[in-house]
Image (tube, rainbow, N blue to C red; front, side):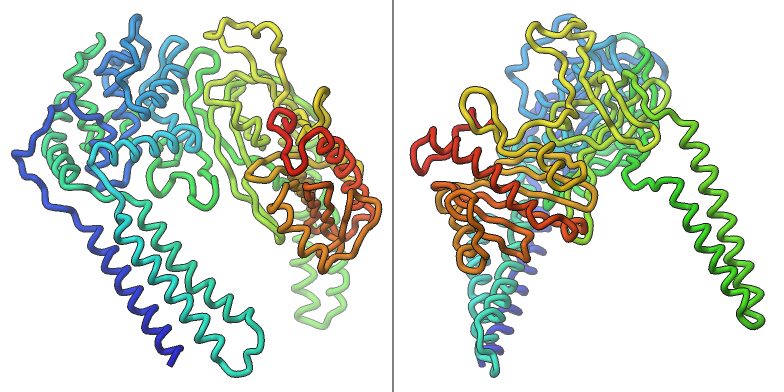
Length: 614
């Protein structure tokens, strides 16, 4: 009976949720053709695009906002060639106080690109596809928030509807627990808890995902209907723009046509055609990860001439050419061995294997010749033309890798960079690069002062290499002292690692090397008790590390306590099985000693201040 009730409750919940999803997809009744409207220049074009696309903002909102800002005098749009618009900065621009957040974000990016003698309109519009995470995502979030504030959109599932659905999900979870617990021969509570967890979390995720989407209000539907009717007439006259700056009315009409998705033969009106990345709901950053697509091409102004540069993938998976030679030898041995087989296998297989051995040998020799002819290092100055985030992983875990593309004037280079370096770079930045062309690895990355910044470094701020290993978790007052550095981890594990730091309620760092990941976390109070409690119960005590220490997870994790702080160091990856058994205790001893020095300078139970933690 309990199982039948659980099935009936789950089916009823799915039926109600499906009805909510179908009903919220329907457009509300429009106010009609006589709906009050402030005129073409009275509403932001990004919001017009939001209404035309029924709450699913498209990439056309970005170039439409550029044209709208030009109509307001913040930018100057001219037509140097028929059909080719050029974006420049005005001599005297109005104040930015009346602009919305989305307009201010876009205007700052446009000024950065067009501040060196102007830029093609297509290059400014395509920048949202070259840097989805840095340009399109903040712009999209701001426009969606402004649409709700303006009363054009609202959440598809309002709070009065979400609450019963969440309660229903909880009821389904409880019934699932009772149904599994009532099954004979079930002696433990693990299986019922697992069933209840999934029976509850899946509906909750479905409700949360649907509630984050937008739905048009009655006013938003009226705005979308008006824009769809006016867009065709607005698009018809854009070709009359002359070489002189266009009038605000002409730019406003063109902005409305682009925002409404009218067929306008204007380069850049639909960003992503050249880059291969179409900004919008399907290409924006994933809600689970920060992964963004890699653009196939991006605009660059190196040398003073704007041009489109192709972008290739990073070479983190490139094999050494010498790896083909052992394969050729193996195939040759197999060819010799299979020649002893009876006919017809003894005649056909040796020929195929010998052909494969010859092909592998040729590939290895040619690859080695190309590699030896390539310089070991190369240094150049270039311009950052694209940024994206890739999702990579192995059998143990997945992680996000920040990547940039740099144009040296002849070609583009794609590199993996640290998250800290990724956050300090923007499109158009000039950087000094030192890299290894043989492996594609970035060795040094130093931002250079831009011409618009005066061409000189501010006093007291020397140029800093963004790829230099940084100290993590500086805890001691006075001179900075790290809890653990990449050099110390490298010396302990016997292979080079790179480090990143994070702070989300707890402090920590991640050190990644080839087939190896070392993670460090430090927490205080109740958060630390979540690790020390299970470790004290099931772990093996290790003396001499802090106040207490335990080895758990088959000696792949060490948990230690220093006062009110709890630290945990974990190694994972294929190479973790061959590490010496004293690696974790040695690293934990180093961290515990420095953490004890830090805790001694703070009140009991307190957490080191952000200034001392660096």
